[in-house]
Length: 393
Image 1 (cartoon, rainbow, N blue to C red):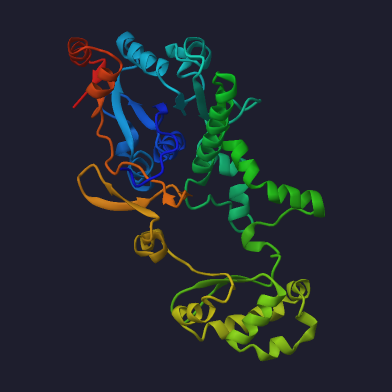
Image 2 (cartoon, one colour):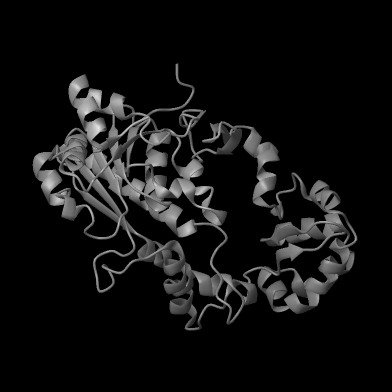
């Protein structure tokens, strides 16, 4: 019996994707129990072979799926793809606008043949003047103001992960799940479109709202005026730690825990907004005191007090994080057979963590099984493989 929740069991997903945004949609759906079939080019998706910062894309976002390799420049390859879509509940794609349309796999064509189909397109932009531009996560972060808000003034800096790709995928999944619910009532599917640029705008909407409220532009985060006086990274004797004192009651507790008797005695800074205005006076005192402790000592004092704190961790340190070890990581076998652990979709349902099959799909690994499930006989399957329209192991 499965040890993971499978609320989407029986839902079939056909995925025409690459890189991060589209595959992340499929991974989330697979982690919720859907049957996800990746359609890759002959030889496999080039995402598998990326170097540097791209080398983690495929193992992170493609476990729990089946793989079939199709030559979509051939009539036979397109015919197989069409047959797969005709039997699917959901199609996910994140290629350039019009790419699937030119193969005869447009939403209109597929919805006409399969009215229950939910067709999710993950794009750079929603309809508008930019909709035919090519976009990447970094393009959206630059255009949408996130890079401006992340870096110091005059030095835009992208966030340290593919945050827009992944969040855009999450919005795609939200749309898909809403469309599934509507299909329960109407019997019909629909097209769902999520995008990088509009996702970025949604994430920086708080800064747009700040401008609307204050009539002053939001400063980049490294230069921002914080809503709290103590809300920063502090150096210790060894390793840095973030501390946030976000209420007056926590200020009292913070002063008592770290011995700030003089600061607590100052009644002019008992209220949060008073402390914010006095931040330049308070922070040097706090920094000097914290620098006298090790990070472990600071954490020991703050643990269980309700004061927000965090060690400043590196991604590679998360493999040994006790919280993640309690269920936030799942075993994954890489293409070369090595075993690792990677983050699960961060949900718990009915007391169970989500999860997916732990082997990455080899290119074309599941071709015969997938084609057999379509009703193709052995002769037809071998003819397609022999012609090169289908790639198989």
